[in-house]
Length: 395
Ligand SMILES: Cc1ncc(COP(=O)(O)O)c(C=O)c1O
Image (cartoon, rainbow, N blue to C red; front, side, top):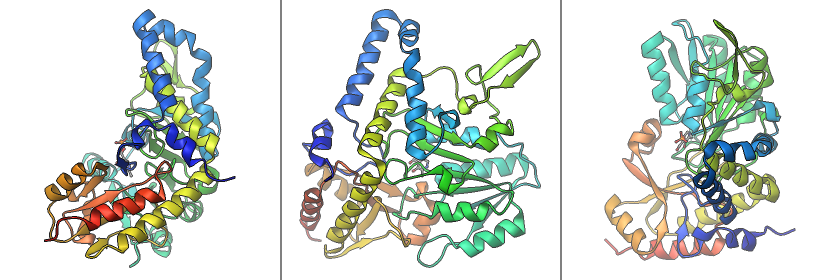
């Protein structure tokens, strides 16, 4: 069966009057998501949040089922979050950090993750160590093995697809290596879920975090967390908790509930919660493998279209590349690019040094343009982008 691009575009109201290539920032939501979220808000306006919530109790479980289905987990392993960072922080502050602990990561890890590691280092004396990358930009898996052995880290933290480069790190290979040690494995899948197939059984991670608004095409202010059975059985839970996943069983005592919901707070924006459920449902209906296949063709097409433009340099690295394409043409300022694209109704973003310090130092740039096409984009849009960029006023 061919990929249902026409149907997908028909259900994506934002994609028709512009070229939208910013799914790594915040993607376009579908019309059915908008309908579901709006309807929920309308009902809240009519009868108040508690009664609407009570009317929807039976539908809550669908979020956990759909999210679990997407990543090969069980509903009990899933927690709703309000952002990837919310989920990530809950994980980091589940550990009782000590000066003797080591966090092992890579220089491709997301800015807020690295800031949190530094914060933990300052507060608890915990050390941070980095796994080397190869010339090509892949993780040096031999070095991972060596450092797991040398530092005996408590946690290995990997960002599956870095925010400022197209690299798709081999999370499965890293997981197989981690599984030989006692180290916990936290995968930041913020840019990969919804873009490519991600399966927690194969990856063998203990925790996985994602935001809703990027390649999942969910509403802003949403995300989710996966917590493995092993972690749940070890009774690990976050520092900041409430009644959503914990039971106050005695006046001076409480117990964590058996499920990953212990990582959630009770209060939620249900219009967003059901919006995210719908976004994940749509991806499951199309099939993440089909989406990945389409996305692979799409990003290869866009990369080669951009490569043909005189003077344009692509900065992505790694042996497997996904739908984040970073590039620049020397001589143009960020403002000139922004004004030109605004005139041509191209929606994209910049990656700036402050959001990827190690990577931008490696690239030797203060900023690059970031295109992130997704499965509602077409090859024709890739051609059009090529034409638009080639038409930049000559310097
Ligand atoms: C790789 C990666 N991780 C985490 C995040 C943070 O996501 P959120 O803003 O939902 O916390 C981002 C956002 O750009 C990201 O690219």
